[in-house]
Amino acid sequence: MRTILVLALAPAIGLGIGRFAYSLVLPDMRDALGWSYATAGFMNTINAAGYLAGALGAAAFIRRYGLFAAVWVGTVACVISLALCAITGNVIVFSFARLLAGLGAAIAFIAGGAMAAAIAQSRPAQSAILLGLFYTGPALGIIISGLAAPFLLEGFGPGSWWIVWTAVTAISTILTVPLLITRVDAPPFKSTSTSNAVPLRPILAYLAGYFLFGAGYIAYMTFMIAYIRDAGGSAAAQSGFWCLIGLSSFVSPWAWRRLMTRGDSGMTTGILIGITAIGTGLALFGTAPALLAASAFVFGTAFFAVVTATTVFTRINYPPASWPKVIGILTVAFGLGQTFGPIATGAITDAMGSLTYALNVSAAALALGALACACQRRLVTSGLAS
Image (cartoon, rainbow, N blue to C red; front, side, top):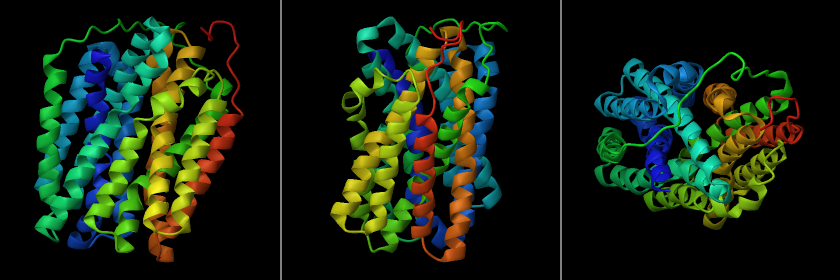
């Protein structure tokens, strides 16, 4: 468990802070720098493009340098990207920083996920809990940024977005220390053409569903704080909403423990994506505090569990030597969805003049993703299932 918690710091920095903290700063950056919603959405699109590139190159990087080295190198890259975000609001430099954050986060996440899966495999009775703990890493980052960003922006006033980036850079630097000083024994990464052969056709439905999940969830996570602020939500309301997403995700390992044991097909993933769609849809009925709280809780409870379910699916249906590559392929599908989601929904918002349309698109994509994953059956081809 200690090893899992150390590994979880990587997605806490790379995803919880490196990716999602941007949503908290987006409204102030958009106002101060004169960005359109499409430009603001592009900053998460370029982050997702970096994540996609990292997913494509992760297996080769891991093969060359090892699993644990990939975790901490990717994490350090994310911290550097946060520092760049604090320095300038120049569109080109900021885009590069977001690209670097995505690249580092993907490599660290895939390597960490493979290590977490190996640890879980050695302790079957605790496997769901251990995997869940790793995938709640981003929740820690979300809570940290949610406690800091809204109040810093309120305290320092308009144009203080760079102060928030400076603060989360300092926090992330501190969180990186355990990864750098702790020696984690990583299972050897073996690569052979036979063990790593991963035909895509048997999992096309699953890949399509995960793609739609990536497109749908990122629109919600990119624009919900702007949605709340536009409705008159205070710093406390923004912080409470964001932290509730993070806190509710800690319930996931226990709430979905039994469901995860049936994760050999795509039905488990489909159910969780469907619950995420319900959480997104709740925000469409208004901005009353109770409604937004319900949206954040339902979304947060299922959102991180979807990623856990994909690892369970991988662990059950593929041999250990193929895990990094399978997780990488799934991450590519996820990354493609994330790449198209923010800029598409931002452009829709600019054209229609309301963030409600972005949330409609988000909920629809998630609902379709749930249906696609539910069509995926367990792999029974000889040599694939373990």
